[in-house]
Length: 141
Image (cartoon, rainbow, N blue to C red; front, side, top):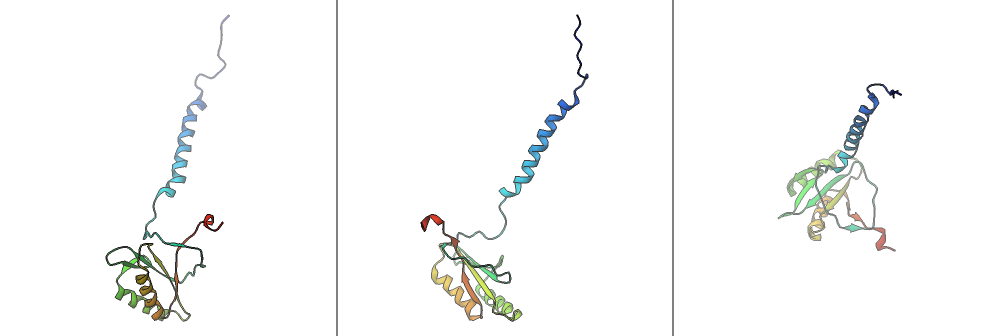
């Protein structure tokens, strides 16, 4: 009795399975890759706050980072104190309504310097909000 194989000589689908694995692995890297990339901008460790403010799309964001002296950023552009006053005055002239300024500062920035920057914005006629990182719910329970 002679045994005869009923399979075709080359089972093509068996060679395609590793390609599916390769495509699945590639898809995972493409989908998850951007989540591991740090986005550019100014990195700030903000203090905790239990209050939240709705975002005003036309608001200016002033960021204060550590340095000697502290470094000021308007939006994502580094500015000196004199430039900050000048740019806030220009921005105030562009808007008819009372404009808003959000101030983000590192946790280690002295409150006196943060207050000085806030008073500069208030003198230009801006509404000023100090931003902080939200507290976890565990501290309230």
